[in-house]
Length: 399
Length: 232
Ligand SMILES: Cc1cc2nc3c(=O)[nH]c(=O)nc-3n(C[C@H](O)[C@H](O)[C@H](O)COP(=O)(O)OP(=O)(O)OC[C@H]3O[C@@H](n4cnc5c(N)ncnc54)[C@H](O)[C@@H]3O)c2cc1C
Ligand code: SF4
Ligand code: FES
Image 1: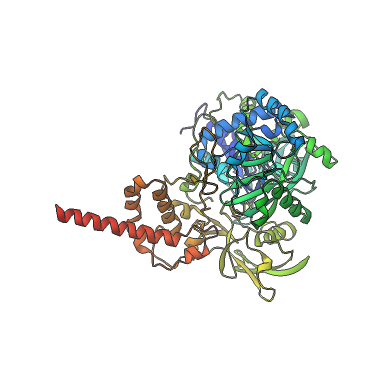
Image 2: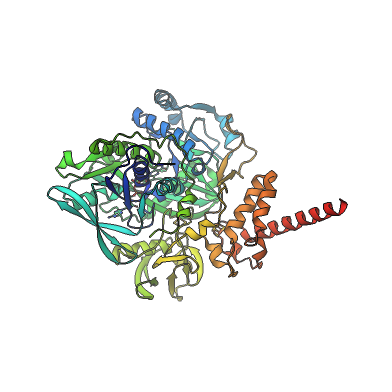
């Protein structure tokens, strides 16, 4: 793999080493930019490593938003091609356990069809033949191309690609402030935790890819960025009970996704609101709620052993004051140019998105960067297979 | 919530710092470190990602025992025992509890795959366009086995050798090529059969058993080759 396009002297700093930062970084160096990424902890230590691990075909969102559904489906096709080792070969089944859920089938299938998400109806017998541990009161279900993804190894594929093409990756390096030249950001001040020293790094553009922390980073540049940190709990039990992801055939709600991953069964999630994206302590009530929700779908869950309950923060775009509103916010993502929006040049922020859509978030962001710097280079991240995540470590220790 | 004092190794001091952390029956070592980083010292270095024993980043030594800090519960350490958290000793230290695993990953041959056929509900029907379900390997590449291993010579180590054995399980017809790798000087022959690797493995990979199995396969192959030569 060689960088293509105009090899540019433009230096871009990416803040945030989650999946979004990883995909942006890879796309930047592939299109010929010089790029450096700073992550305050270990790579993927934010929401990225901790999420549920559902590769979204878009079916979960499609009734509300066809475009988000279509985009997810497209990304699923691409990710299976470019990073097959990071995705288990299985499917998702939206199961109708109740009459109400069965009645939702038509709305759901129609929406999927409009967004080009393939579906297959399985009647009760077919479904139980496929997943014998499901609650036998079920009425049938719709199979979609959802899957299990490795929350850590998928973004590490992107980091491996970025490193191979010469991106500089600095973990345990926290961005502390921005360096201004008038109303333009000209660099960042970084604390290197390895050495305990501060340094200033000059750049032509900063990309704020800090997920749930994006509002905090923006505030450091005196920019008001509406973002709602909304954590949710997941619960893992020991024992893989199903091979497909089991979801409920109804509008998204708490405790309606059971993901098999390795030898675990993981049920999620819930949602609450937090002022501080770092505060992810699991509410006691969530554990009981999720346990019961899993038993409802797969009764054998009650005989499996508790493994871990944990939470991750959703970087929802937009500010919201109530929990109900929080769920209504679009799950789509946005690239915000603070030059045009807030009069602060030299900085873009990303808000929203999903782990599944990391690549397209990278593409859309770098499209904006190319336009800003008048660079003609088209995105190739969908076409070239990524190096395996282990290749990341072939380049020696990070310094 | 109850409270407890934990001692955490700090590189800058070459000694531990003590912190008091709140805990309940679910609180893990990693949760305690998160609390310390957020409330007391934002510069505390440790690795973390998944928080549920799947990524393999968070290995540490807790009272000398090599564990995944995201799974190890504070409540499982008797209250009259002190809690001392240190980095995994054999890894490339980069600060406090954090290490860089490059050396560990370099031992894995390039073409090791990471998925295998699912082992549950094997009689169940599969979607039409699929032969069988696949799942990720159990090995989360945490390096606890390598850290626990008493062998001090430079060798491949239990995790990489276990991955070679898995490749033979998955592709019996490629056995010869993989056995060549395992039979290298830095391979199976360095194992002293201590089995600490298997005891410490958080996901039941049983690297010790796999190395032993590789050893017998290599012996069997040698014998077969020797008798072939005799006949000729
Ligand atoms: C409960 C829950 C379940 C979910 N399940 C799924 C799912 O099944 N499938 C799916 O596709 N998506 C899922 N998501 C969404 C997904 O987790 C996120 O969309 C995705 O991980 C966001 O990635 P990111 O890189 O934008 O943010 P993050 O991964 O949070 O990365 C931001 C990074 O910025 C770093 N940072 C912050 N401040 C600084 C600083 N000053 N200097 C340097 N670095 C800094 C942080 O340490 C962090 O690593 C889920 C989310 C939640 C909350
Ligand atoms: S074999 Fe077990 S201990 Fe060793 S790296 Fe794999 S999961 Fe960790
Ligand atoms: S944080 Fe992933 S294994 Fe512990």
